[in-house]
Image (tube, rainbow, N blue to C red; front, side, top):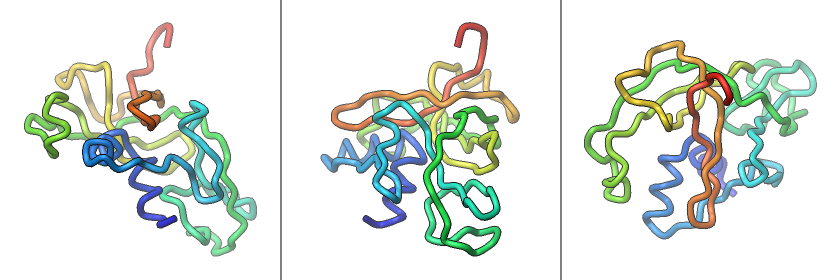
Amino acid sequence: MEMSRVAAVVSGGLIARIAIALNEKPDMSVRDGEPAAKERELRLQRCHACGTYLFYPRYLCTACGTDHLRCCPVSGRGTVFTFTVARRPTHPGLAGEIPYIIAVVELAEGPKLTTNLVEIDPDDVVIGLPVQASFEDVDDATLVQFRLVGPGR
């Protein structure tokens, strides 16, 4: 499987929605074949030599260069690093979703990933906003998205 395809699908629901709209079936697995989103768990590669978490999936650790990489569960908590509000669909398959928030979320473990924010008004989003991974089943895929961290969540 191509590494870029894995990164694109895992990095956000919007990209997977485009694949679904194009009648492509996104592959929600990670490099070593472990299912992640289907199990409602966010997993990233972690170097067992130096402890660095990596995203997008790679063959070698970017910190120490070893290939001792394994997929590990992560907290799914992070903060909004940057964002934009799409008020026009970026793909015809997303026409019913506008406006939607495209964001880069910095995970508590360090890596940043591109995703979308759900269940929040676009006017309420600010840099540094605490968010938590959530999962949505769409057709045969499970999308990783992020929502606001708050009481009862």
